Length: 566
Image (cartoon, rainbow, N blue to C red; front, side, top):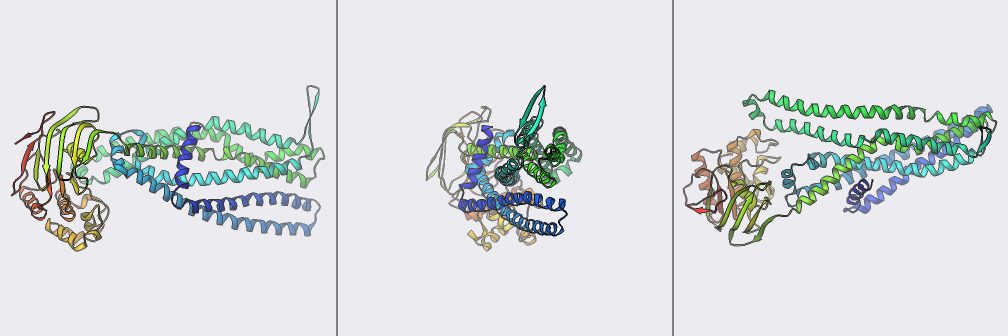
């Protein structure tokens, strides 16, 4: 219970303490005031019930018509109040959702936390896209709905108990094993006892729902991810005749989803076996409980109906836990997922490493650097390596030695290892073997991660033409490229070279960045880069010799050995 309370406290604190928090708080108070108006309307309806049925009992036609008019006014005003409260609640919902989403994205991207989370490969932080897009929405929506409902019911409980207490001013007389008992205001005690027993039984039957809801969200996200991942690899699957294999994967994911779904609906069936009859009898039980007073002549027919209505309001208010149990279980599961994501993202951003990164302005220096796998297996060791400004270096070595890992270590991503990396902190660009294609146009992709306005559209277009993408620019320059299937592997690498030309960094590491190009195209593009960016230090990581027309220093990478200059 304390753990759940802590999770809610942290998430609510993020919403309240954010910029615009005072406006959101004022909006919440206004919505609360409007919501409490429903309590006043319900109290007026209880009073109206007594007056209306008394008029019916007396066959007082004018008074009946008058009460019908009063009823219409109460309903009209209450409807206007409800609609305004709902409208403002949805405005607050999107404001708080934006706040939580911004914070989640900031934590996910801070200090490359998204990369470290992906490397962790733990179920605790699965499907971060779902946590940000879906859980932020579900948490804010559920929190507002349940909180406002609870506040109105607590305030309403005080009002309705006072009314029920004043109406049930007669005792219930019972004879038990020869002892005469009188229970004053028995309907008040009956309401509390009735709901207490029902709430305890509801919690006992529905307790497993929280875990089942959380697991269902996890398996739904896994199924969506499998489908989305296939969508980005249509060519590879089609060429491999992999349709049957993909179908097996989809069915396995769906079978896991369906298996948990069966557990979930079985538990809901068990819970519903109690809550459904309770929900449909809660408005009739009060009449049965009030009948002894009516049959004993303590109240008239109008008083009976008013007493029944007041008892119903007390029971309904006290039954908030029962009526909302399923939604509360879902909300608690959502809060748990979202809070664990926030905490994991923050922890990953501050991840410790034994590799010491320091700033050096005139070159790159690696000293006694040893890189390991996450499980502690050594990949390579570098005793000493220096790359000067404007120099071209080729790091070569067999596959699996850790060449790409070295690039990640220089970038500050790889935490596993020891040693020292000294380098300039600014002016870097890293080109992996498979470049990232962001959402947007081809021109925007060439300017990534900056915007086209930072360089000028003509400069970006010129760079695309220089690397041989003029036809793609003519075809798709203004069209959205949401997935990379429109570009071949070689074209993607040409796009990365264009990005390098546009940004003109002082330091660049190219990790197999031209491996998809033929020798002539590779030589042309690398010569273009060297000619356009003579001050840029190029560190080429490749297992085969790059095709180029300029001098380059080759260095052999050896597993668990010092670098040997060639």
